[in-house]
Length: 191
Length: 201
Picture 1: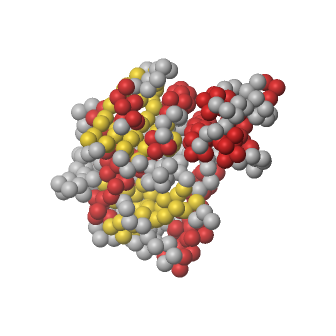
Picture 2: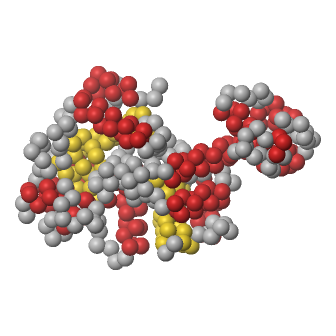
Picture 3: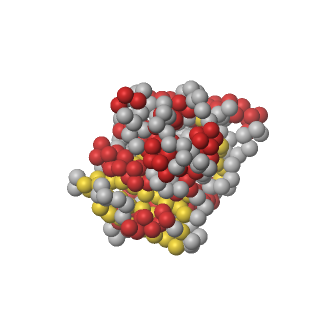
């Protein structure tokens, strides 16, 4: 499976893990990178090599490797949650809970991609509120962030309320494009 | 202002475009929480006193952030039909029914399975008022035949200048409630530990 792994250069190794697998190497249509393969193997209890072994082979620290894997796990968990939310019906959480707008789920999925590279503490929990709004929450002791994705006039907009170092930050109706996070939000996540 | 008006507002009779929390506020021309003085059904034990202990059941994984803190998103229901809770004196059966309903709702929505994480415990008076003595949440007696100790916590929708301002107030209130509710019931003591079977093992 890891036949083409370059064991001498950590950068090449990371590159290998995150690049799409060749079609003939794929074991399932939804597994497109080696790291996803590793995670899938871990998830079904079929893993035959430990992260320590791989790290050793690639001269990469186990911590760095673990961090890479957990990043992918977060994204997978977040996207899985959004996929479930997509199918929620009215009353999914109490009699009057609203289902999400499909466009809001799609925008939230894109947001997940942009949030994936952040450190563990800055990767939010994804949930759906009673109004059917996809919501991302961070509460790591330093930063409190409540970030939502809504559709206004057919376009995705973000709103967030945050507290950092005793200061409040609030933005509403911030246009969300597919080219990255709004600067103000990025600054909070990097704080 | 009558008990009948409160019951009608709670039972969604009238302006169905509004959330229950809004209708409950409209009952007496915007006077905060007028229906706290009345019972929403014939099964209730009477209005909820400030000193009464309220229990709110937290379930996982829905209620927790990555770091194991309460996800404030779960409190958003206080702006809709209310946060279902149980008041002092509730029977074991009422807690069981609450958990069973939560589990069933999750399954019906094909959401993740729920288990009991903890029970937030607080006096009703602690969530009713802000530091400046203005009203924060209303604690309504909303007993049902099966759950005579049922209460609902509802926010008072503010008369904000704009939707944006309203959103900011809501978000701030969600965090405030989360920060307020820090005490939990001892599940090994409550009903001789009977509710622990709902916890993840």
